[in-house]
Structures are given as C-alpha cells and as structure tokens.
View (spheres, rainbow, N blue to C red):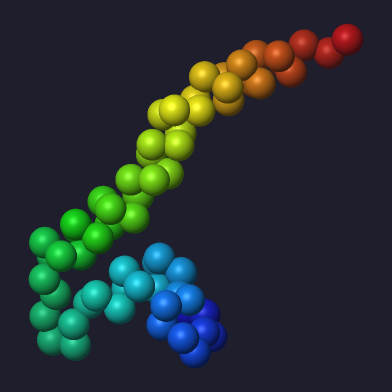
Length: 63
C-alpha cells in the first residue's frame, strides 16, 4: 500500500484492491476493472512491438 491522502492519486493496483468488499467480492466488477487497466499497456506493446524487436535485433551483435 502507498501512503497517498488523495484517492485520485492512488496507483491502479491500489484502486483495484479497494474494489474488494469487506464481506463479498463482485468478481465481474473486479475483472472488468483489471481488463480496462491492462488495456493501455497492451495497446502500446502491440503498436510499438516492432520497434522493440528492431532494437533487440540491432543490439544482438557486438562490433
């Protein structure tokens, strides 16, 4: 957990953890929030993946 006094400044992982209720968990809401929080990272990796592979291939040989 992080010490942040404003709930709007919390990291995504803390916000996902706060979706759990005291006695029950609505798994549909938790899973929907997890998918929505992972979506930007997945889109960036899909769109920029070719540059990542290009950089790996450019640096594999010394000299």
